Length: 459
Image (cartoon, rainbow, N blue to C red; front, side):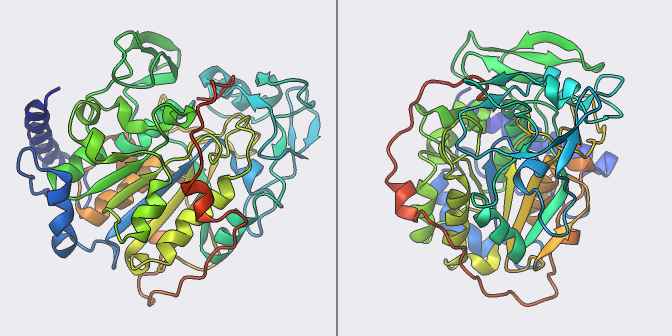
């Protein structure tokens, strides 16, 4: 797609979406018509004027930062958090009670988490409904000599201390579910587009555009596998909506040669990959976000995705994820942007780890097994556990309502926004208190590339 073609498609799509909103009233009360940007508008032009003219949205929010981590269930990562719905044991397929065992983030084992593994773990009929949550022992494990019942685990609290510290100061949501039921490729599409174009499991070949031979399976309405399709999509995204309103966005991702580049969601957007946004708004490596904030640069909407070492993903052989996330939070908190920013910290999917809460059936491809969500802001409630049901579309809805954007798909239309239960905009902004870390920002800024070969089960 050429730049000119991309601009024409964007204008046509926005016009169509506005018409649909008017007819169906599906875009919500704040989804006002976006002012179209001039064709071919560049990132520098957007950055020069947007803060003065952008709507403040929900209270004083002018910046939304979405920090995306990898593959942890709620029971695995926040086991025992005060006031949260967690358990210390779970049932297996034989009816046995299995105590959750401490498995550190850097352990060399992994768990399969394709759609078929979801169906086994859920153990519900038909095809993942009415989940009993007792089939996790049937999931395939990877690595040399994994312990028995690897799937039934929690991360030791000594490693999750930065996460617990953040949750104790702000909001932890214990009823958050991925909008999709399987792997990271689809999850990251839901994070930017509220859908995954029917894709399921990981692509064979490149995770996105640029590889004509790449293919990914699809999921049918009856939750059986369908024909393959290209993992290069033309569906609209939040990025295309922000472009149409001349609002800046940035997507910080691992270097393309690194394993963490699998989680660079906009690679699967033809509009972005084949247009100016790919070089202007997709920024590598991820740690550049720390330098940009330090220099006084923060877009209206920012996604921060990790490297393998900072991701919390099983078999990445690292426990740097909590310090990485805390470093990004500290960078925003200690900047001029603190009083105007909402930070969402989420994990894209469960990664095979046990969780006891049955996921609600929301659609043929969702929802998935429960994951954590944290909300950080000068206006976030203090030491609060939200029990409201959220999904990936909830964060999109918050972004849309803040900046007056249209709904994208079913997920963000049906989802509950965190604005209602996680924030108190009637209170004055509170002062930021830094999150203690062991690793300093320079550790991540100066980190060498991480071009390790793919490990089994990393998606």
